[in-house]
Image (tube, rainbow, N blue to C red):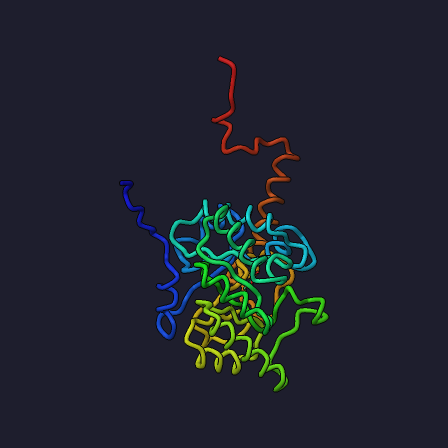
Length: 273
Ligand code: KIV
């Protein structure tokens, strides 16, 4: 009999047990080197479909394909061996029917080796979530501001200003929980509403632009590292990589123009004997 392989990764039940306990630290990752840097620190790495905007310069997440998610998911899995890895099902790969969602999720899980998938949750998605969970696929829901619905909404709109919006978001969160998701991302939601959702549902909430009272937090890594001129207002920049990179490239440009050797040191230049 083959030896049992014990996973060193944080598991879905471990994340669920963190509800109301130690906060869950989450960040996005799309590449091997970034996953490598983040993995020792975070509990959960999300290969978000934000990859389309962050890495491919797309105007929204709508253009992201399943193949893109698979390639970036594989890269992240190669760079991380501790964090739980969740991959987004992109727009068009799961909404048509529970069966279409199952097919996409199975392809992702087989080819990537990730532990779970995430779906944006309109109030009609609960059948799909329970269809996946019943077949052994752990699911994270995503409520509130749903970037894949950008064209329906006319932009990236925060939620929770009107009572109708509040009811809708609460309904989405409750139905995601009832359908069997093990956690839910709460994005761009009024903080008191995010807090109320966190109190009402028994699965962990992971906030982004929501409330510090959520059970965990997630940010787009490149936003919090200060790689872009513009980031959403709620994002705190923990570094200013844009400036650091510009400075480094300026120094390199100067060296090259001056005819200096841009390698480590002239000592390492290959010379004829
Ligand atoms: O796609 C993504 O990166 C996300 C997070 C911002 C939650 O969904």
